Image (tube, rainbow, N blue to C red; front, side, top):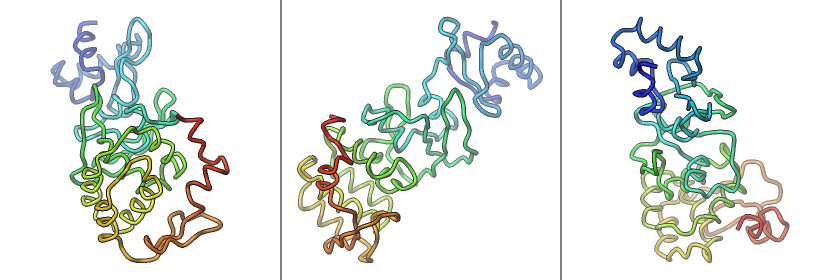
Length: 254
């Protein structure tokens, strides 16, 4: 256990980091072999390992800490970021990692790690020991990608758990995205949730100003739609109708 205490302080490490610690690739290879055999570490993915607690026999890092340490620029995003903040309406056995480094989805300890593109200049904060997208950034990312990650109803459930949002930071995130369709979606959704978040008229005016102006469908796969003239969006029944139908049960999540 010569190197275990130092590795324990790191929590997880790459093969390159271990070489720096032990001196040579051959020595690193031997440490990896011996420590895996003895249960001191586990392989997360190729050339990346997590340290195992001798007391619990479990990884000493959470899925979010592991994901945020996969690469120097990695951070937790989308639904996983809602979970880090405590606003996930349910825990997914998936971890979404925003990074410029490409990797193939992989599974470790029952959790599937997914790469998502790290947009330029996203707002990232430190939440405890986890690098994570700021809550306003998380909200905008999740609305943008809801058909790829979680779905609209789950995003709304998460939104309803968020105690408040800074509308200026939401607008700043929208500006960084440079996506007219995203302005349309956010304008429409936050207008439907105006009682919950209380965004100002200025927010909606800016969303309208930078909307694409093209007629779009809020959801690609939707049955009955209503055209929202203000936002040039074809949308499913209003959120109030969805609540009445029990599709989104705020009482059950709040």
